[in-house]
Image (cartoon, rainbow, N blue to C red):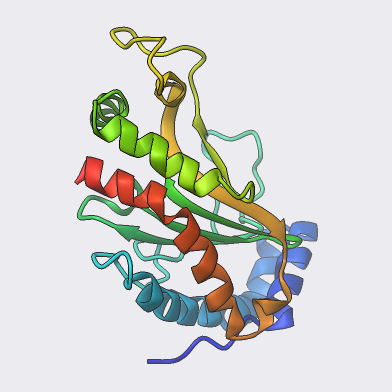
Length: 230
């Protein structure tokens, strides 16, 4: 197995240039750069980071394919229903998930490298309707609800991480709007996240430890979701 040794400086430069020249001609002319400067180190990160994450998320899926089915999201945008018709994403997205459902229907850990920022998250972005009902019932459950409040408090205690996933303006019909956890009934997803400037560790193997520490500190949200949704 190849070991992750960092993203080269050209990785960020590639996305900076792509943001300026987001068209097919430019991308086709720089496709080999994308493969070598983005995909190759990204695949190494999937494997190396995945093994570390399995130390506290043992059923985590490690899939380094670049087809869109694996951990690395495809660079091509779906423009069918978007007013923005630029064809390429100007960031690198990687997703390690834990569970047997399709990858986006599980909780997991997310890495997003943008030209100026690094975004890390743990949880699930959007709950599909069948899981949303399970989630809501768990939010108000006598034991699971208390466990959720504890997990959120544990993750946010340092003031470093934020919790999001809010989508609705009021709790759904049939749930107590005065419940201590009522604010979580406004969610259609649940995740902790941190966004910061690109760290100096990006260009070395130290990025694995940098991300691991933050993923581990956000993990209580992930663990709660895995317990509830499994």
